[in-house]
Image 1 (cartoon, rainbow, N blue to C red):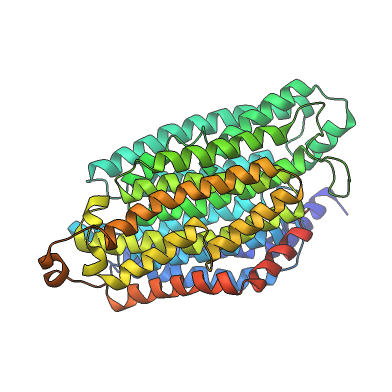
Image 2: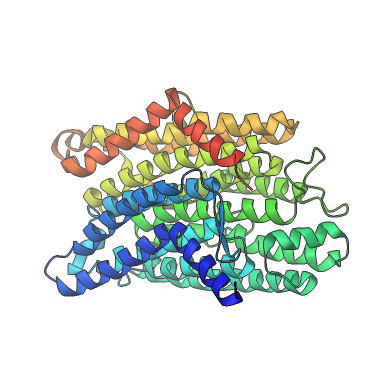
Length: 503
């Protein structure tokens, strides 16, 4: 067999497993074409995108339980990546459904076809990122994800805060990408390979210079930390989250963060750590350089800064932005141990975080549609004006705090269990104390809704509710938040199966 024939056979075999990504690309193209052809149907791109992503989900189900290396090792298909891909699909579909009822998005007869198409483009980037095992693939995936994110952050461009958010996102994103790609060049220069697994083999061989390996890893950590909103790489998050459309804010807080963690865990596990079968401390691959300590410090800084700065916020979107930073800190606690139990708790947490965080942002969106504001002071009396939405918001906030009987409690319980199992009592104590702090700023929201005194005319004459379809979505998310707080075994089993086969 010639080299050309071998290459073609490998290519054709890879294409079959790459079918979900191909389906997303087709969806992207069809959505744009239909939007151009049927200009009178404003939401045609949304409907095409939703249908296309649902079809992608069915195709993706064919990859469940499969572990394959594709395109000569550029990407892999395995249960770990498949788990995150389903998470991305569900999040994107929910965001598209939420966007259909977002008043600000449709103001001034704005065209929204590109908006939904770019959401599909972001999904493609996240799919690649979850499977990437090559430095070039990782970088290209992050850029595909980022470019669409920059545009969507400022999609309501006539609103000054949205344009400012997009500009800051571009500047900070470009800086972090530049630092990351320079770190990748150091790794390549030291090992002469771009394959993450081969770089690991080179490190373990002891025949490479360790200094560029360490510096390169730290620089790459900057790029991943930016996507995860980890302190001190979080500086873009509050301004972008506050200025972007609330649907994009909620999308970035869940899907983009999950993509960052997906590649971060795979990269450091495959590149810097010893094989999973080793019984020794897997974090100490490199001579006396403790990655574990660095990640632990990042975790403490991230949850502490996120929670304490959130205490002073008077804008709900900005408050939830700092809350999102704090949750990245909780997730990093499990990264510190980097065991199968720890990674399982991360996957479990992301499913629950998706439900409760999207729910909180969605109710905030429905409030904004009616009161035209995201300021905390304008939430005074909403418990009387819209009791159903206020109760739903309270459910999501309780779950974000981590109180039973909600999904948020289960997620934090498993993260703390993984940390305590490896003897990091001090880290677990800091996590619990931070959770207590978070209760104070979440309580500010439902205190304003229910406990602050309001005039009688506010109680009686200005009541409102959301339309039936958006309200039903909020009900479903709230029901799932409670349900998974009581019965979570299927999600836990799925997460465990995704990690045990994680290579």
